[in-house]
Image 1 (cartoon, rainbow over the protein chains, first blue to last red):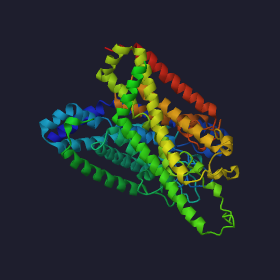
Image 2 (image 1 turned 120 degrees about the vertical axis):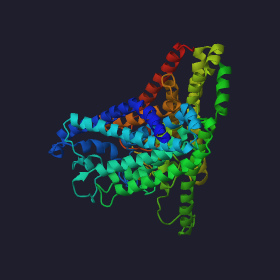
Image 3 (image 1 turned 180 degrees about the horizontal axis):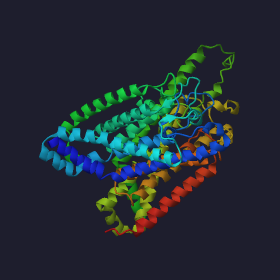
Image 4 (image 1 turned 45 degrees about the vertical axis):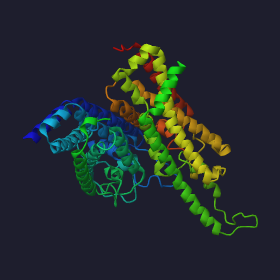
Length: 283
Length: 290
């Protein structure tokens, strides 16, 4: 019963009262996807054959989730270009789950913790909050992009059109056969974002919140350049996914890795929080 | 004014986050210098085994000019993950050392004590200068250490323009011609440019601290905003003008993507400086300290 009250408190303060963050996420991703329309307008003049079938909502979404192809940096004669929209998406969602837990602990959370006498309840509640908040922010981002697509006449489908790999510069000789459905990629993205949020939460018990954010973003950023499997951000990119490429990174492996990383983080964080000095939070 | 500025610099040196971030970046730059040095030493060991003429020159043409200081230091590295992390996280890293201390001063009331003693204009001007210097120093010194360390082990062989692929400096790169004539000057200019950008960008969180109510937000939101704008600007120009517009790509001494134009970077720097300076001086001086 007490755990339920903790959870209710976190949902009320960390999610319902943060509706502005979700709205802002929706608007930002709507605008981000709207820029794809500019490209489509140019394509309708320069490459009309690309747009014989109307674009799908999946086309708008993959502009964010594409990332950068593996070994892009090692190809002779081409320089490595940072996928800024993909980086923005990661940085924004990780930022939205950074503030609440420890700021709450520095304020009213301390009293709740003392009154409840259960650190485990507090920690589990915050972990669930990270999962829920990431899911809501991710859903707001998807909603923003889907709305943008629908507004500009896209078909409501998660299948990606054939011109996208060429447009986003990840076409290869070893493309998987069409249709390319990105629903599994979206699921892998959500799972890995939740795992990254949990790692960030655990790290913020050891180092300052800002440094934990810097560390997690740096780790994910390294994955854009290095296609190594331990850098889990590779599983978040459509341009490296087995949905488009054969062989590619299997989103199911990404989900399994996210589960593993999330569970390890929760366990380490739970151990750390059991003796964490709550009088010196945020210092 | 001088006294306040001296006080601000003393505070800066005592600031824990400044020292921590400085140490982290220094370690990062030293480690990223060690990797090309080790690689070069391995290559040099192989070269020693190869046949030489009477003057000690290698008989085989090994394109030695492609193994040079100018493409081995952190800024000049055309490959490797270190420069990608360093330059893309630079806007976040420079905001950490001192920019948030202004936020703490404003919210703890300490700023009011200083303002009462020396006046608003002087306080905000000194604060602006100190934050600018903190950003510039925290980037410039580690880069200089990296450059010096690499220079100790890898010769500064003159780059050859026919091998530009190994340097990724082309005719449309900013100061690209200078690189093949006076590469040391090119590197110095880029080091100064990096420091200038870092200094200017460090003042963005300072300006944000007058509007936002969270220390985390003033540090992270400008970085996230810059990433978003970099994409938006690139996308808005696509198929119209093939230019690099993202500042984090423009300040890299190698060419990343499209053609570079110095005026674009200058406009971005001037705009950022003008906005932050006017916000800090106008809003800061107008706000009621109570």
